[in-house]
Length: 414
Ligand SMILES: Cc1cc2nc3c(=O)[nH]c(=O)nc-3n(C[C@H](O)[C@H](O)[C@H](O)COP(=O)(O)OP(=O)(O)OC[C@H]3O[C@@H](n4cnc5c(N)ncnc54)[C@H](O)[C@@H]3O)c2cc1C
Ligand code: SF4
Ligand code: SF4
Image (cartoon, rainbow, N blue to C red; front, side, top):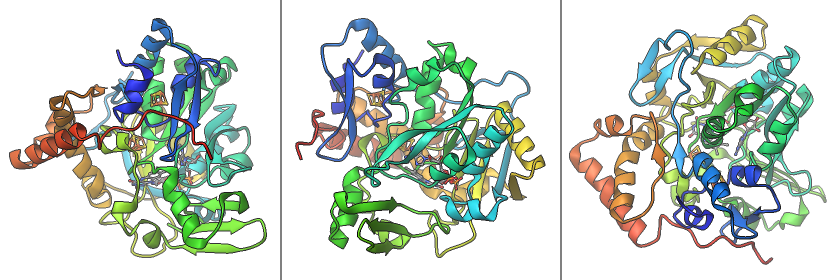
């Protein structure tokens, strides 16, 4: 069993907030660290029972695979991509939603459809903070307008699950739209808290290349000579696909970077350590996952917005088919896993690399997450022995030198 400090300092924390969500704000607070990461800090020594629950649910200590089907087996399977009922390219039928959202608006359109069809009472997702628009905060949307307000990719820290226990206490059916690690955390919680299965009716996710430190966004402000207090808007993408990163200030100034300008230098992505060993960045434990569909993994220009859609569970299939039938989403064409290999080459590389990286961390004497049903060794077998050795040795050396770890979590002082 790891302490909260060990989870953080070994680079396993992604700042989902679930430890605080289940232990309560009187025991754990989330702080923004000097590195620009949201991290939990225990306000007092945690009781063993609390720590046991945290170890059982934390996506840094336990990472689950697909939800076991209750009926027919999913007909589609791929070693890298896992199981699926449908693979398609589509977009939100409403052109305004399609334009406004991150990619093609599938997640927003499905969130709105879930509310309109009364399948759920609210959607838990994230949105830009109203007071600090560069930061993200968890949001409960009870109507379509609010779901749309949360549209767009938020690449910085986002503690979606910071009050998850309070959300279950509401005893209302809801849907979660969040990153794959957030969904995995909640699936972990479902093993020990029956309220998750009772109230969380749908879990939708985005295919995820990694969450950046807030420092990545702070660099953008520095580039434009803007202070965070001056901001009225910080949008990473959307209003087109991918659309620009747009910054607006309260006194009416506006600045933009193209997606390529924002992400051209991989050395400056500032991706959090947990993401570098992520065994499930493609949302195997969700009901449905949405992605970009750029051949080669990056945009070459703007387009009208097309999502890759992976329907993973029977619930996801029912939702997908009902949303198509109701005209909430439009399907452009059916695709295969080999198309996803072309759209997401970085995800294929990562899925093949993670087994070696975890072995390397183990060899360095570091703790690693317990990974269930994600076929990591089978994925690694698609590499050459030399490639796996290189991944393992690289991770071992980085872990030994502390580069896969993090400083002790502490709040920023300014
Ligand atoms: C951190 C991150 C990494 C990504 N990496 C990839 C990648 O490797 N490959 C790829 O194809 N696409 C990636 N994307 C983009 C992703 O493909 C699109 O968000 C997805 O296609 C959904 O598009 P959409 O138009 O349906 O989303 P929208 O309709 O705009 O809805 C997005 C939903 O996601 C929620 N959300 C946004 N950011 C976060 C966050 N940080 N944490 C929790 N919930 C959030 C919003 O609240 C909203 O409900 C990434 C996005 C993020 C946030
Ligand atoms: S990953 Fe989530 S549950 Fe685990 S320590 Fe970090 S904030 Fe807590
Ligand atoms: S890469 Fe994995 S750990 Fe990182 S934000 Fe995405 S799903 Fe979470």
